[in-house]
Each structure stands twice: as C-alpha cells, then as structure tokens.
Image 1 (spheres, helix red, strand yellow):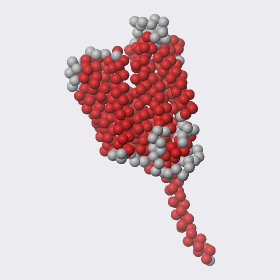
Image 2 (tube, helix red, strand yellow; image 1 turned 30 degrees about the vertical axis):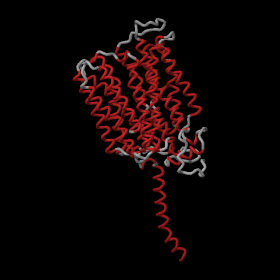
Image 3 (cartoon, helix red, strand yellow; image 1 turned 90 degrees about the vertical axis):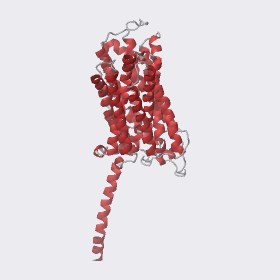
Image 4 (cartoon, one colour; image 1 turned 60 degrees about the horizontal axis):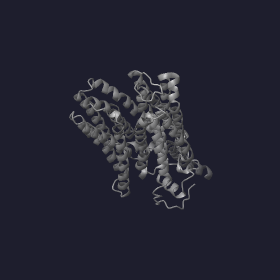
Length: 486
C-alpha cells in the first residue's frame, strides 16, 4: 500500500507514469487503426491492373466484392463491443488491450498469404476476426483510464489516448503509396502495420499496467496522488474490487445521463462516418476533384483532428488548472465545440459553389478537425458517470454508435440518387447537422458529470444489509435487558 504520510493535497508530478500509460495507449490505438485502415488503402493497388509492380498479384474483384471486403471488419467489431467491456472489467484492460492489438497484428501479417490462399473469401474471414479482436479496444481503454486518470486530468489523458487513432490513419495514408510502389509491393502495407502491432505488444507487456497499484515504474508519490484523487478506486491489496462488482444492468438502462451519452455517441458517429465515407465522393462528383488520389488531401482532415485535439487538450489543462471551468462546464463546452462547429461547417458545405472545391476541402477539414474536441467531452463522460463500469458503458454506447456508421451510408445511398446533384447532397448535410445539434443539445441540458449511485452496487447493498442488521439488533436489546432483569 502507498504510504499515508504523503500529503493528500500534493498535486503529484506534472509528468509521470500516468502520462506514459496514455502514450502507450496512444501508440496502441495508432497501430490498431493502421491495421483497420490498411486494406482500404492497399486494395487500390491490389485491384490495379496497370500497376508498375508486376511481381505481386492483382485481383479482378467487383465493386460488390470490394464493399464486402471493406465492411467485413466492422461485422466482427460490432459483435464484441459489449462483451469486450465485460471482459475488460473481469480480466483487466491490460490483458484485453494486449489480446486485441496483438492478435489483430498477427492476422494483418497473414493477410497477403490469405489472399493468395483463398482469394477474397479468406480475406473477409480474416478481416472479420480482426474486427472481432479489436472490438474490446475502446472498452479496455476506458477501463484503464478509469484507474489511471485523476478526475482533473481525465479529459487531457483521454485526448492523448484517442488521438492515436488519427495519428495511425495519417501514417498509413501517408506511407501506403510509397510502400505499394516499393520492391515489396502492396503486401508491405500489411507487414508494416502488423509488425508495428507486434512491437507495440511487447512494449505494452513490459510497461503497461491496469492500475497504479500494479505498475512497477510508478513512484509512491504519484501513486498516492492518483489513488487519493480517484476515491471510487479500491485501494485493497489486489485492487480487484471493481472486477467483482456485478454489472447493474437495470440501473444503467434506467439512467438518464447514460441514455443521453448513448444518443450523443450515436449522433457523433452518424456525422463522423458520413463525412469520412461520403465526402470524397461528394468532392469528386460535384467538384470533379478526386481527393482520394492525393495522399495529402486524404490525410489532411485527420491531421487537423490530431493537431486541434492536442490544442484543445492544452487549452483545457490551462482552464482547469486556473479553475476557470468546472469539470461539468469543461465537458459541455468542449463537446459543443466538437459538434456544433462541425454542424455549421457541414451546412456551409452544402452551399459551396461548384467552382470552389478548395473551400469545400477547407470546410471538410474544419468539420472533421474540430470533432476532436469531443475527446474532452462525451468521449470521457463514461468515466465521470461510473469509473467501475466505464468499459461496459463504452462497449454499450460504441455498439449502438457503430450501428449508425452502418446505417448512415445506406441513407446517403437512398437520398443521393444523382451524385452530381448538389441539392441532394445538401439534404445529407442537413441531416448531419441535425444529429450533431440535437446530440449536443441533449448533452448540455440533460447530461451529467456526477458519479452515479449505481457505480458501487455491492457497497450499496452491503450498507443496506448493515442498516437492517443494526435495526434488528437495536430492537432486540430492550428484550434482552428485560430477560436479564427477570
């Protein structure tokens, strides 16, 4: 146990092992997104009959087969969101994150061989398994953050972690063209992303930890700072109390703040995936400018998201340190920036003249870039509501949100029957702005950052039983006194 001689008001080291854990998760999400996106960029070279590198096979897949290949990852990813949260709660975030990234990395290494062995069917199966493994990444991350991030630093540390997804996307988009054109061909895209995942797994195995109590690197000063700031985290010898808590499903699903958070995540995903999957088509067909063929333009929105996310992180740190904002105000202000600014940008996007393609790209970059402010808002709100069940909450909300990432492109397909018609696209942008507006409006009016009473169901039940026992004892004492006197 940590010495109690360390003063509770100690703010702890400005840079410590908690930041190391966040950076490790940053790179874990980086390599996981490299593995998630690698097929999206490699498939162009895999289907290129005019490839300058004839040493590697090309495949004559139809657009339908291509769609199946690109979507197969998310079939498995959807299935393990809620179970992933439960497993992270039961076995710890470290093990589940190691399993998720490590196994997915091995599968990435075998992707080129599976293509040669069983064509697109084998790749579909392999991508399904990758998604199945990665389904527990975000729930595991929330489970770890709940034990490592003091309340005042949750937004900052969470932003560091989640920025890894943008960084991984930037990296794979930037190097994929060079790798495909190298002597190693398109298989090297999978080898690099898989190899980085293997390397990260060994580093995480050595330095990663479920909690400060289990870290071999942390100082007693920092450990006490974190544990004293997170009152709901058990300080028992094994620090496994939360793993033994039964999940209060009924309390969770009857909690208003939880439903607000679920709707918020669905709204975020609707807008995010509509922009990411459909805007390239919009720019190409309306403005006759193919941004997918330009690596810089393809990576620009993600780069903006990464840079702005870190800027928002620094700003939040200054405001919280100066006590200008409360935690509740900080969550809602940054979430408003992350959803209402993109809402305004998407509405403006619908009115851009067909001769102003550069302005459309700028608005897209603003919309996606400012989305990163939600890392300091709704993304971390799961931990505010219930640190003990943060992974489970993230699993539930992310599961529902991923349904939106499937439905949103289908809605675009129904509304946009003529991809060159800007009026039809304008309706899509209205829908995105509507979801962003309503989702954030509910969050700022009905959302909460208060610790929910169902965070510790066993403790509440134990207290209730203790009170009942005390009532019985108090009732028996007078009777016992009468017997003794007689």
